[in-house]
Image (cartoon, rainbow, N blue to C red; front, side, top):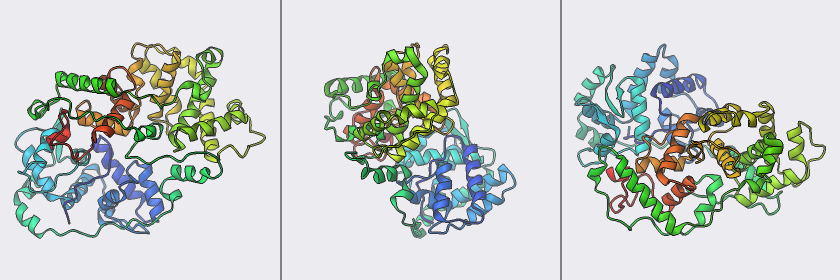
Length: 498
């Protein structure tokens, strides 16, 4: 087996990740078509359409129909958490014994910080291939969940179930293993049509012909749909302006002083290049502050529909605005809010936009007087939790922060901590914050962890559209995992530790 260094995202809780793997294995016990298996992984938030072979290689499956691998069969047959943990550790050893031995040897000496482990794996002292930092985070969480390691603050140490693996690691001759190691064939990903691979993209594609003038969404590296206009901007690079921060200053931690210096660098760069904002405003969706006084719940409903279209329709701004205008001008939007079945659906109303608006209307109908509940909360944190309880539940996640920002722009919510919840913590935002040291992990799978990332973004950028600043910074600086500029970049960044 080659050294597997990429692992699917499985969250920041090792026990939950192990339980998810067991559940997926049990549900796939009899085998199934590839399409159904992929849907199962999507539901478990494991599937990455941009890296399909990662999940297939991890589970040990390929082609179609999907037949459970020995690893999946063993997980499904495990009678306890400890037994499942043993199966997982055997699997991780098979996937990459060099990585497992290295971490066991390190953690066996003392508690090691994750940054320290990552730095060692990227050094010449490590003979194997270094995993990308997000994959290392996943691997560490899996080993913690299985009992090989245990958390000690932000560090890891040898866990309660490590003894047999310490002995096994001691027997491994790394140089001999690497000399004999041979790659295995890549997993086969069955070819699928656009509607199978990405329903949102398919909806946009199929409706483009029927909605005259609707522009397709431009492609971009992980750029979220509401901010894809940033991809076309030509901004001066934030690099090459200051003296490089010595790696020794952040090798063990990112101090508050150092994070303050990074914030000042970002502020100066953004003040110089600040472009015109191309983002959404409440007025784009016919929402004004006076409307909140007259019918606040309808304002919330319109913003809920707007969020659904902006994030799920997979169109650029012009396409989203056209779809919203078609719903509004035809009276369909008002009918759905009143709980009425529209008598006529004009051809100008996109089918996917109609479905999203219907879902939004149904969820809003389940929580009457939601606006009053938000205003009655003592803090923005309480109001956000109320909004999440009402519109989360499988419908919205990061969209809720976007809605909060629209309400801030309207000036209808006034909380001292409001700014902590008005940055939309997109994945690219969290990745950038993690690399710059403002977050301990880029993963966030619930509202509280997303709120932590939103607050960190505000701390990194101060006032302003933090998500726009951070994504523009990443695009202009070429900031990414396995960064090509790590040797020349002057910013304090985890990539320079690799």
